Length: 308
Image 1 (spheres, rainbow, N blue to C red):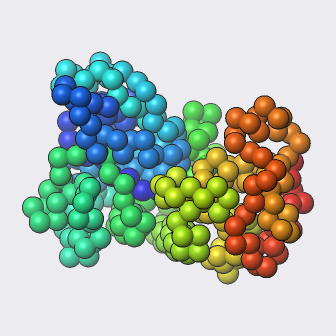
Image 2 (cartoon, rainbow, N blue to C red):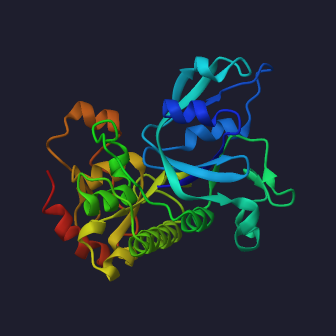
């Protein structure tokens, strides 16, 4: 899961009502803005903080990656027609975050380049979507006491249910509306911080590369637990040996026990995946985990037993 920030002064109402984000691919001169191209970095389950007039008012959970989509009619005539769209579930923050009120604490976490907010001028930059560091995202999550209040339509929110925080909330709430208590908010914030440290440790171990494919695009890499978070003890949740850094589609296959790895780190592919599907997914029997540790092997023993 990654954090993003979107500036929506002009389009917040329309995009929220429509349950999406949209950005043009090119301007009238055929140029691209970095804040538009960032749309391509979003994966399902990522958290996007919504900035409106200097305050973060809500966040949304991406339910799709960006896909080609013509400009929605409700956005007016300002932009070119061809663009990218991301479907998203919008959720109100428990309280607005007025960014200028917190710069003493978080100002140094904003990047010098490709920042959505100018610390010097105390206002949003002229950009649309920006990716945030784990540290800045975690800090803003704490300020906003991010938690899911309610998800009634689970069928339309199936992708959002893959989000670790959403799972934790729904496990506590069942099918009922959920408004977290102060203790539950603290628990959820601690969970997010723990997951941030876990990802940071895995990024360091694998030098910001997928442990199998070697892909070095951090925004596409997932910190995958071998033994599921929900089944792990406090120590196991933080144990770097209980995880691999995987590109998104391998993470999904691993999480659903459609792939695993043997004691030498070689991939094991479920027989439920056909040869055609393996080809489309880029799977082959020569793939293996790099830098497999004895600690990884202990956790993998349990994972292999659940291979479908």
